[in-house]
Length: 156
Image (tube, rainbow, N blue to C red; front, top):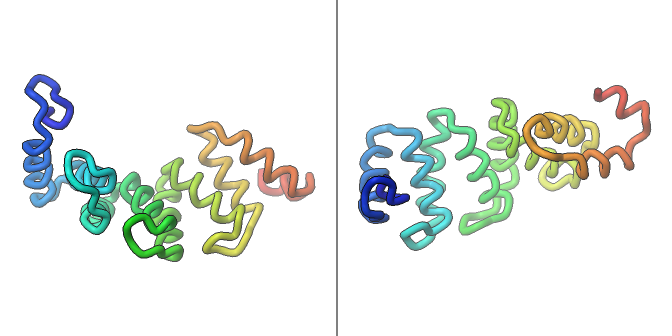
């Protein structure tokens, strides 16, 4: 409520204090929120190491969104060392839990061969899974143009 000013005067410092208190007491939601606050610099200076710490705590409790966000930070080397292997692990875990953004990001890795062996069939399958909740028609079309009909039929 303090973060958004809903029902109370907006106070980002009070929101941060309460998120930290809740996060330190094990709230996965607060840990994920703190990760995003520090990653994006919302009311604080961006601190990618602090963001990663909070995301990891939320991931330990099963938060796939935090895994997807931390995976992106690791993939791009945003404020922390680039680590494609760790990004693949995080995105694979989150994708297996049904996180469409992780499925999409991981599919992109398999499409381009960034950090993993290039695998069009795996990329197609992951994009198709992500496509249950987001528009991936452009990506599927791109991959389909690089595969023959038998390969596509085998995946489906």
